[in-house]
Image (cartoon, rainbow, N blue to C red; front, side, top):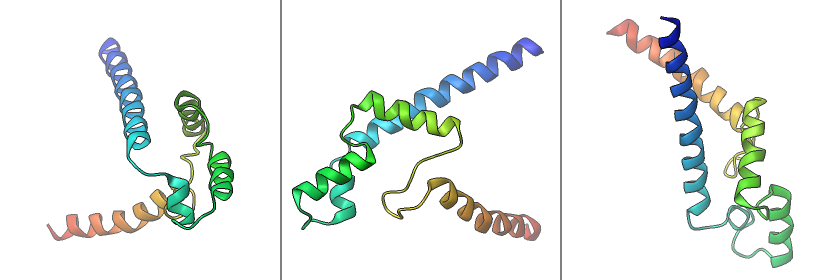
Length: 109
């Protein structure tokens, strides 16, 4: 039994690692620039460059991923480019709304 649980935990860890790399890569390959999105199309090139540097977008893919995964391990999921607030706070807010709704739906079923 202990061997089964160990194998399942290893498989879970590998699945999460592969999924995180794939999702990070897909987001990186999507056309568009988060700095341009945040500042708008009329932003000056020097302002865009400064924001890219501040966000770490000027760093290589592997370094950005390592920085992000290090944050995830410490509980920091980063900041949302859209909402400009911590992702963990956004997830927590959604869960606080969704959980009571799910419980009510289960109670009514």
